[in-house]
Image (cartoon, rainbow, N blue to C red; front, side):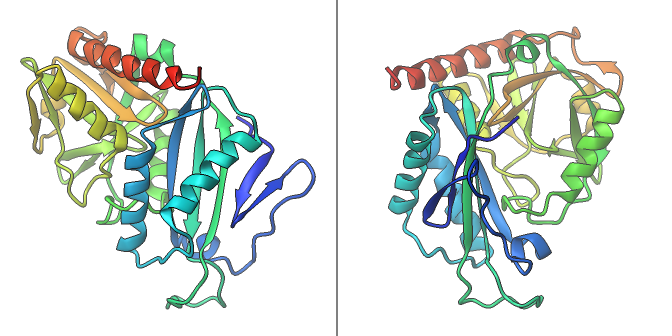
Length: 290
């Protein structure tokens, strides 16, 4: 995937086909992973679920005491202008990162630091084939820190788990902490049993995904019972259906875990019902592009 040429850097727009933004050697995002990020979906060049993404972005900044030098309204204007500057009308995503900025290397951060902000657009189609067929996953130990509710730049455990899954011929890794299933390496996780949804509660042990929240609202509309409670690997293997949720993978069925088929080994009816409801939302988003 290649990003669109014009990127947002600070309060300016830079054409990377002409010049590259300068990142300081003492940028805290590089040295400490001292920052946060968001990924926002675009359908036909229109934002999908932008407001809840921004709410989470500001919550993440507050949790790590990162004080922005711009208003939320200003950030929204910049993001819309980023789309317009690139004349982007396709399906894709915006990657937005805010770090604590630059200072001489020190574990103690200066509260007066000016944050470093940048954002760019990458074209990305909906994964329709995988959504129809389902994917394989493998379980991995959840060795992440205890503030997974913050969408921080500290993703090394996620990277290692996702790479391990790839080497095993799987598309996603399912995290397990002390016998409890938490979420995927870059997604949230649901199982279906006897017509009801089960998912880990939104505690500090998972990221409360925006699509996770959206799917919960869709389940409510479809009158599908939901239980936010803890469960283990045995519950997953005995489930009728399972799926992951994420901004770029939407509602992604998991049909196999650690070589064992889930349910009938194909996506189930509740997963398909939620996918259909999600697609209706995408269709409505696209209408705003007309």
